[in-house]
Length: 229
Ligand code: PRP
Image 1 (tube, rainbow, N blue to C red):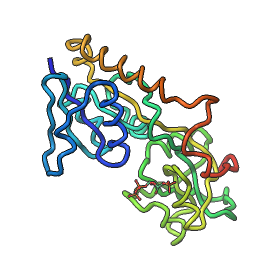
Image 2: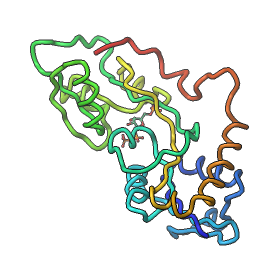
Image 3: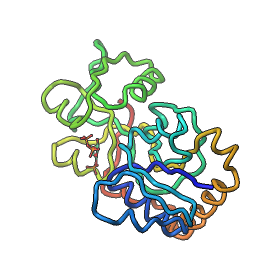
């Protein structure tokens, strides 16, 4: 029985694939330099394909992939109808409200918030009964407060480098993020043994690499957050 896996293209995907490899689900042809999109290892019962990180949940929800790896940010924003099977402890970062260091909110008008994550931003501010005006962008979000397009941004902070290099700071944390193994609901039922075997193998690898002491990797230089905005 084959398990079809949607991997997020890019830096996170490389790390995720290495974890699958350590868990005994490697696929040597994936290392070949070519433009192929699907890679199979019938002996290990696995096939991989690379998709845009934001599309992984769509492939899994609709059953084109049995399992996939998606960031908690994507799962929170799109709420796909999938099972979340485990935290892979990779791709750790934070969803934050960020702005200029001297930013002072003006309660007399809606806060202008630029983001790629409109539902996340709406949920965060409606929980604080704050009226906002969402400006839905698709990249380079940090430009918005610099050009006066928005007061703040709701965006991902990993190392904090992009913020620091543009004179911005994290003002409040919305939630912490890491990569999750997700499964199509029907696949988990019909391929239960195979998927559970994959999940437990990945879990053993994750437990072996988890740092002692609970220090979250990759966040140390992102700086403290000031609080509510
Ligand atoms: C993400 C995010 C920030 C940056 C944060 O952007 O939107 O811009 O990474 O990383 P850092 O804290 O390590 O600097 P991405 O690279 O996905 O590109 P984008 O601007 O197209 O959204």
